[in-house]
Length: 101
Image 1 (spheres, rainbow, N blue to C red):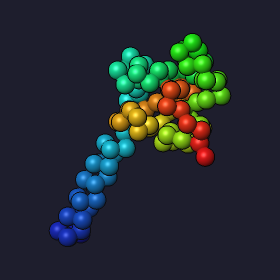
Image 2 (image 1 turned 90 degrees about the vertical axis):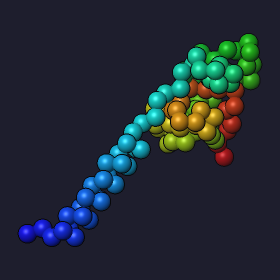
Image 3 (image 1 turned 30 degrees about the vertical axis):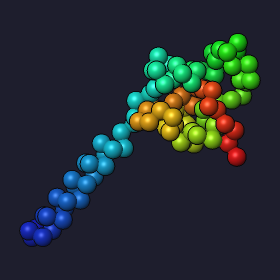
């Protein structure tokens, strides 16, 4: 038999799980057409970076090996503080790229 106290505790835990599930949902990907992305020269594929505009860019510079990337090196996408609430492609690049220490 379930007591009222047990029922209330289960309700609170259940609501917490549901609420955290919505927070854990993946953020949308940043679009290359986004104003901030355009300003930083962001591309989802590092090989498509504008070589004339960014002559110091190399194909080895990827979002997933940037100091700003908020994910693991093997992740296909991850967060970036430059694009709040959005994810960048792990194989992407922008002009703010900085080597991970």
